[in-house]
Image (cartoon, rainbow, N blue to C red; front, side):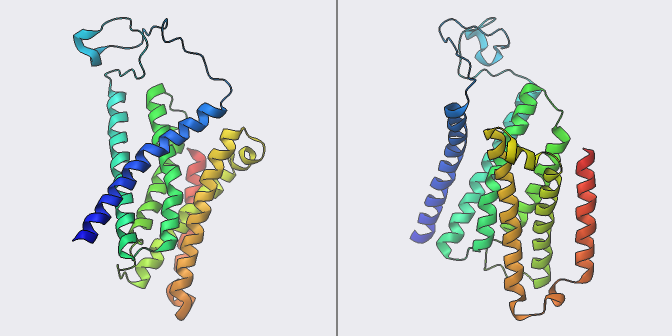
Length: 263
């Protein structure tokens, strides 16, 4: 009982710290290195773009400086709903990881894949927040494609995280192939877009952003291949991965690559 209680408390604490630290680190880095920050005169500035509904009768019309302006709109509701979903998913996922770590039943390869996926999911939340906040949707479909496929890969990672879950070999292989397919699709799609140009010749924020995506995909692919290697250590590879599996994977990658190029 004490073990379970301690594991729950540690998981909750780490989950909370992750929720606080990730955006703080992100914005602290931008604040430190972005050279074009605008000076804000908090004593003299006013805002005429705030509907002030949030403040009720306490404040109306033009307002002075606020750290956060909340307009009561449908997009604000969307941002709130997405943020609550992201907070809940990250918090519960980290609690689950800590629980398995305490039990000693965590699969290290999948843990590495999960950790490497945190940045892409954080970027997803940040991107959709800005799309809705700015009402700028030029890259919306492209982002939905990457975010949806990344989510599918992360769900697979969580399904395979616990070594006590005795999944059938066939089931595990298919899940691992999904991880590999998604990683390859991301690298191919980004590579034919701006990935390598940004990494080599882009601004520092473009380099760090795209390297974060690339590293996450490479780690995910490597983790899946390592797990396949463990599975096939004592059994023939062709018994685990059939010819039709490889064929369907190739077709899936080509189709998704083509689809992404049209978004």
